[in-house]
Amino acid sequence: MTVAPTAIREEMSTRVEEVLRQRFALHCENAETYGAEFAALWRATADHALGGKLVRPRLLLDIHRALAPDMGDEPSIAAVDIATHIELLHYAFLLHDDVIDGDLTRRKRPNLIGELAAASPGSTEEGSLHWARSSAILMGDLLLSAAIMGFARADVPVHARGRLLDLVERTILETVAGEHTDVALSHGIIASDVDTVLTMSVYKTATYSFSLPLRAAALLAGSSVSAEETLHTVGRHLGLAYQLQDDLLCVFGDHRTHGKDAFSDLREGKETAIIAFARSTSAWPRIERRFGSADLSLNDATEIRDILRESGAERFVVGLIGDQLDAVYALLSEAELAGEISADAARSILVSASRLEGRQS
Image 1 (cartoon, rainbow, N blue to C red):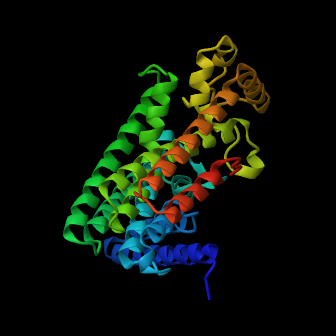
Image 2: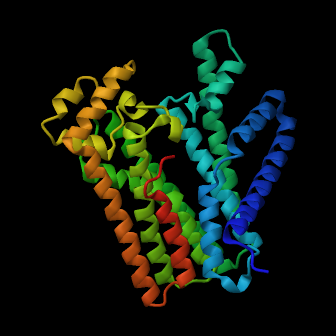
Image 3: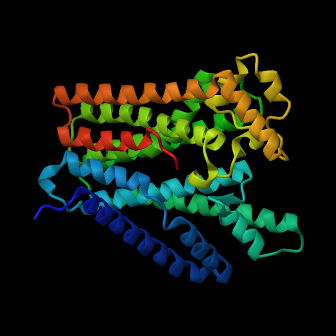
């Protein structure tokens, strides 16, 4: 009997979730040695990290299965292990990102910082918040370390391990560089323009969310170096399309559907491709005076959204997303014709790309 691809994906996601739970259970147990507060921090972190969409692990396992069909439907232990540690890397970045952005919520619920600050009041509100943010920084460091050690200990051939660690090192470097540029853009330290914002988005989001899973899958499947490089480029285009779609949803989407904080990018003064384009238009003076106001009202935010739409910013970014997806289709077609990747692998990636078109959450 043939097992449906959806059922296989769910089974692989369950495997990753189980390994994640095992990892956190072990960390929580070990943390008991260092006191109740430290153990409680690990338990709270596990609660926030588990139960996500597992976008990155699922992408890796989907593509690995397509690139290595001889292995059957059962993913290798190494593939599940590496997919799991990519998810740990992702959550480490999220913790640091929440500290940098000063966020206390994620997906309309308190994030780890918000929960810790509310649950463990210190002598002052400022003290509680400092303790919560410090805890998030330290936990992000620990998860980053755990992820790197997980990659290093993966059951892969020696030559593959070296390439994997080089890939992880480059990924972390580019992600940090992207975050650094993002903060600089937000505070006017670097001038904002479309090219700079797009490059920042590739480094900050696309490198670890898409290129890393795709390249790791190719590496584990024993694909050629040229196939791996093609998937690296495909991942950059997919990741940029994903980030641009996120930017559109925050400003123009229905927050009741996508679950994000409505207009949070406008209140935070986030330099997205939408804003970078608007800066080059005559509409910018009408936006600038209220852009980045922490107390931006719903009416003001709605008016800014309408001005952005009139300026052509929404249409421009929709076009950019189309450009990225067109590049993905062209690269995959060329790679398939050249025999670099199989038709099944190309099809798996195209399914991921199709999910971005018209994405609402």
